[in-house]
Image (cartoon, rainbow, N blue to C red; front, side):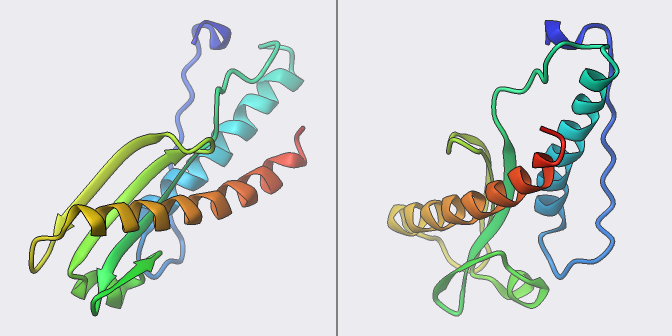
Length: 137
């Protein structure tokens, strides 16, 4: 945080079009926006380097009709048996988990399967984030 100095960066994400997962899309998009904002500060010599330790992304997972699902759409989300949002770093560390058993309880085995599924989705998002920010590197 010292590298940023006495600056505040406000990131406001509006999801223009989505079929569920808007909070997750906002988190993933906010990382790209923050990276680009920091890149501009480097370009303008306000800071010497981008003070980020890792990337950040979020994805929804859940159990729908008995099956683990990645990136639930609205219909799946509204009728899911389990609904979970996962926020992770690009290196796979967890930042936040929000899981709810909507109809019945779920097992630790199901939680582990959903976390693995979320990690695979976040890997894909991270690749796209790196592609989006590569133009600034």
